Length: 402
Image (cartoon, rainbow, N blue to C red; front, side):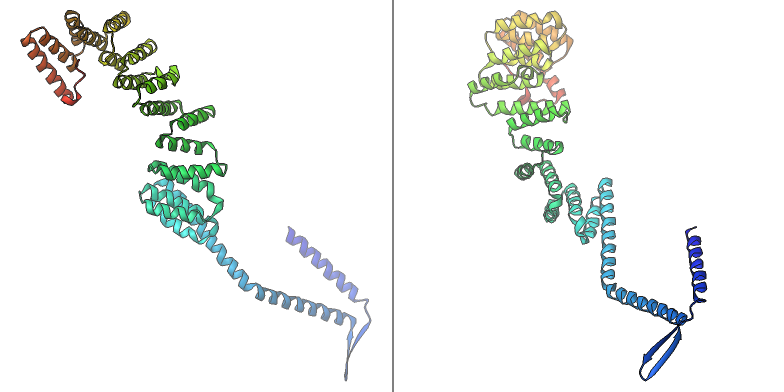
């Protein structure tokens, strides 16, 4: 439609020019001594128009010839850029597909374009990391460092990869640089949390868990795992001083300390430094909130007097857990420590009927020896050996003997 419109306009102009030419009777004389050229006005105007068109065409031709080298260079640059973009796209796809060798090949092809070279280098670094080619990974990271526009991406990627390979110092350096540049987004905080855990900076771990918890950026299961590791680490750091260990237990929030996993760890450490009475109190408090067989068994193994008070406490648990083999075994072990042979055998026999255990048979063998029943002792020792053998346990793994 547009073409038809312009054809109509040109036709109208042509008609108008033809009509106008009929009323132009003037002449134009051009003197070029010793020559004189006489032209009608219409011929002169037509010749002038053709001359102008010719001059315009020559000027356009000269301009295009002058611009030709630049246009060729721009065409080549554009072709290289398109090739680099295609290579970068291929690198991303290959990384997502897990074809890591292909990622590095595509990243090399993408190095021809400065705008995508650093990003391609980061993709190649991740691919080399997945292939455990750490020297190549570091070389790609050095190439990416030349472009400041990908600095944050480089730091986050570096910290994440260094954390996975447990290069804690390098990961800490990357995290510190990231924080100096203002990088405090959620993913970076998660990486920083993992780095703090590897570096055993337990206070930083707890602080990171609280921060991510406020942002709802850490699953509760993961948060609980980090908290447990941090509290356990703080306790282990104080194993050389019994008073310090007890004080650290007091500093841990009660609801956290009474969780079965942490309570068991803390009780073992307290028993190891001679604070069995504190360990027993901790287990009793934990069992009031969370009944756990591991804690019940540990309660019978720790060395904490007076045993009669612990027997009374454990007897009180029978009302709600009378069919718990671990509780009956614990009562038997506590009675054995107090040399209440009859009660000990009664509890151990009930436990053995509910669940066969090498520890139960071993305790019954010790009681039989103490009471002079050698035949029963041999029988129980043989039974304990068979159970331990079936469980794959050696003498080094045998339970505590009072």
